[in-house]
Image 1 (cartoon, helix red, strand yellow):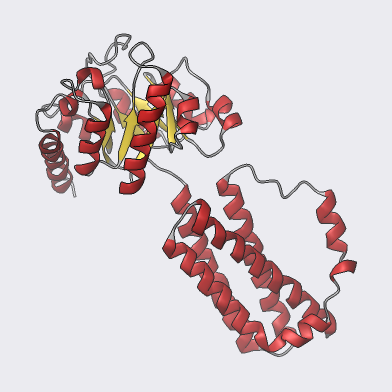
Image 2 (tube, one colour; image 1 turned 45 degrees about the vertical axis):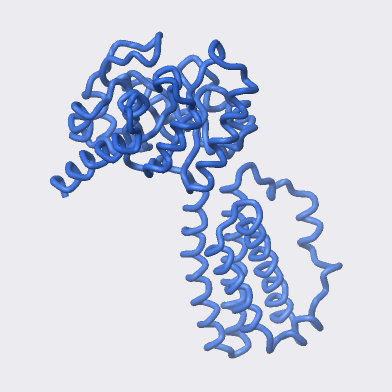
Length: 350
């Protein structure tokens, strides 16, 4: 029976270590009070449930002669290349250890205790889902805000971004060109917008510049067809959300195969915000994407209040609206009126 308690002891330690690792992650690396508290409570529940076995577990412990120690030191199986892998690996460790304790408790005749451990295991499954949802980024539905200082009536990117965020836009993309500003100036602006978005719980995307995206701690980067590829970006950052601009169905399908997190589709209508903008792609590609593209997509290019409903009718839920917002005398009022169009359309289609 000592071997049973040795198994329970080893797995109890695995659970405590895994939970503590995740607690620290959601306390310091990616602060989330609710997830952190659930992990802490779970650790206390496991400890309380197994407390009666403390003396037997410790007396049966033989860590220095554990065969698994040598295997662990020789293997590179525990490498983590992303936050998702880090979180998933620790949850799997906890879940497997709980199952082992659950089964071995039956050998000691502690069936009720085994059932309690089983209930904790199912709680962990749900908590894993909640934790992963916190770090797997998806572009939000609604207006996708993009800065355009050149088309902002003399107002700064920072002013426009602040107005967008105050009006409830949940994602801001910083778009600027080197011929207008130095990279250092752009970096400082991005750091300011990053702080605004973080305080508001909004996402922040940098257009084109990977170095600025990384240095400003942005959530993601958006690239064109001639910029860095998805695989090249992943070599430098496994956590950045990556958006790719596409003009055709083939480009969209390729972006999905390459591992992009989302795609931009456009220009939908004629646009003057990009000097090298392609001819309008129209609405058909959007309709195709709504039915065939299995990652999020955002419509962009020439979208304004008068044609917004046409875009919504294709099944598109995320829409980049630029000059209709940046050129508005009252940015927050304009966003409110655009949101009202979206709200009314969604209500009629419910």
